Image: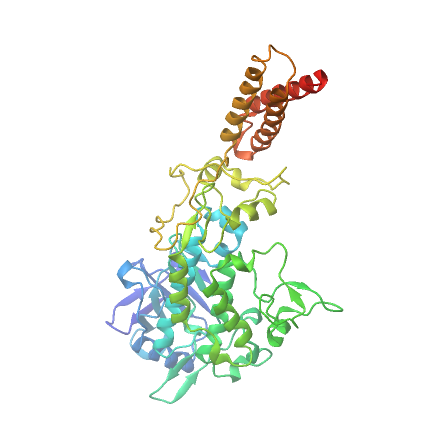
Length: 482
């Protein structure tokens, strides 16, 4: 097949060897002379598509990540028509997207752990920010996505975002006074005022995109949880997600009449910065009847940048990044709740492959060791987190947080227990009894710490020796009736 570029008249020959993929409406080819582009050739070209694409190519949005040599929006760059027949448009050229995956693979903890396990909470923030910036660029040029969903947002391992399927976006032709509508949409990303309506008969507005943007940002920051998912507390069968959206039943809002509560396995809403929580309430609760109250992309961008500046790293696992408004690391608690399956596994766990092992109920609260900053062979590593401009709360080393502290404390107590008997000529005495009791308790604590999965039993010998020594001291003193 031979096609001609509208911009310079160049002839492109596309055959089956250049075929990259095919769908219900078009086939995708890689031009042999330029692998940075792809050609989308329609199965059935129509005059409406021709007019719409001419408007899009003539009025492209700004690329907010042009300085990073990245296309944030896979926008049509040139038109293709049959040789010598410029009125017969067959398709178009657009930037080729490589090394990127659907955003759902990053906010879903299972696929993220398998595909990019070192993608932290910081990079989820950055992904949400870049998504808001891309949609802002579209809105500023008068375009509306319409079908905002997880499949038309691609993400790289460095948190860059690209919007795809742009030829389905809603386009306004100001010269002809015609609206080219977006005719598709997914119910779980559709705002309440459009639920149940025919998209082919509706002119979308930016506030409709803002609902879907809020859903995607919520899923990015809440481990894939949908904002309208929850435990049903009403009577009968729980309604489907589209009915919950239409009724405004935001499970994390302040409306006491909502018959849903957050799922117990979902992250706690307070994990998010207070400013972000307020934006979600505005988007899904306040914006239910007044769509103009939904946060615009600029508001999301500002609050996400503000939240990023207040992220700190956990002492136990520097892959655990959380807001400094929290007193404790929420991801350590979540890993324990999930039976040791860490949503943001440590570098050592990834290196050894332990992050992919089946979860099992832990004997107690589980923490990871402080981690070396060594790269993991074969695992993509995102760029480093910039220094926090906010509080450093959460960076302090907890007292007696490591098994080694407890083990050596147990050994010291054991030595004092034995030494305390010397002034009393090895007779039973209250000092030996109290020290023995302390040694017994500290040894038991060290034993519990040594059961962490990543330690392989290190320190157990010292803790168990302390337990034995403390037990002997207590029984000996008690038997001697000091």
